[in-house]
Image 1 (cartoon, one colour):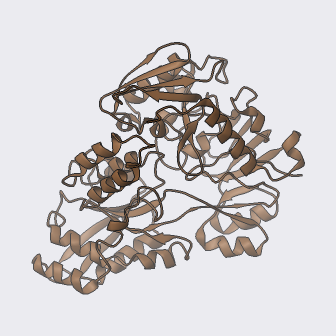
Image 2: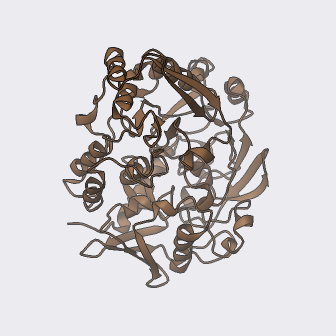
Image 3: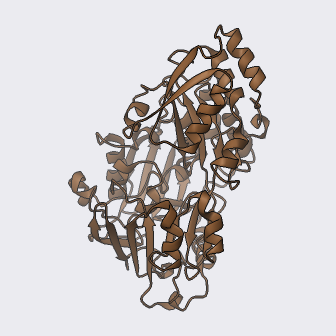
Length: 501
């Protein structure tokens, strides 16, 4: 069994990424190359505080992670050039590239990685502590060897310690976490030179980045995202080079001669149910909701046909997607009504507040579909929705996830007893914990890995706390003068990317 990822693989992956991004621009050989990117600017620049959400993609400009993933979602080297497990599988040693430094000149060595992981586990406002439960202790075996002892056999660690969780921060800068949260200090491909909250962030190329030779952008300018209706015109006129794209604007972008990027992702949206609160403490009511959902309506009206219906926290075709569970609760309004009657509820008797962060088409579809089977839903918009959601105070809500590099992490986030996306904490489906343990204990190169992963998904989908609806790839619009982006699922990479004059 091969448990070592050799340094040569890292070099090969870097070469592949570089070729994938190259568009033949003259700027590939150097020159003043600036990318103007319209984004929702991060509220937090400390990865420990920022946690999940799509903003980790922006933070990856300033930070490098212990590992990366390739186009297939497999772990490949980054700051760590290789790693190996002990025979039992409860200890993994990451071997860092020698001579790494942060942008403030602090050495990026094993001790720095140790301090980062310990901070992520213990800092009071850490958004990552729940992702690191498999890590018992971290020691510096040498300047370049990070030894991680685990609480259990867990072969997911190389995937876990990627962009989502292990964007390593300077230990010197982390001595003042509040300052770090506003002024990032990492070892990524770029260094922040100016940060005006709510307005813009400017970055310049980091010559000390481990893969600087394959970064051809000299400068990145982040500006607050314009109104959805003006994004395409802003790209066409050259105000911006790159921006996120709403599905409703895809046709307009193509008609304007701009490039629409369907970046692969692990995205999935769901209806979140609290089974600890009435009426959802009755399984028949939950099953009624499951059968009331017409996923195709979400695909047609929310994604404009660019998404896919999914009943799982993964898009169809992903490694962890379980084909056996593809249609567990098919759309059936008559069955939903019958289940509510069996539960003792007359049409219109169930009245629920549906708390969402913003009024959206998806929320209106949910309201309409549940009304059609006799459940009255009142939409209540709460801009601070996240606080009661994560406090598990809501009865009914929605959530969308951009997924994780580790599929097991995605599963536990949704279905685990302490999962942040499990509105019904501490409830978990029977058999899930055992199935997840088997998936963790399976080496990533084992022929049984996909089978065991899908079995864990199957067990998780017995949960009454989530009803998944649709998946949508990450949509971007870019000016044709920007070369193709590497097709890394769920992430944005700048290796090989150029901007022509």
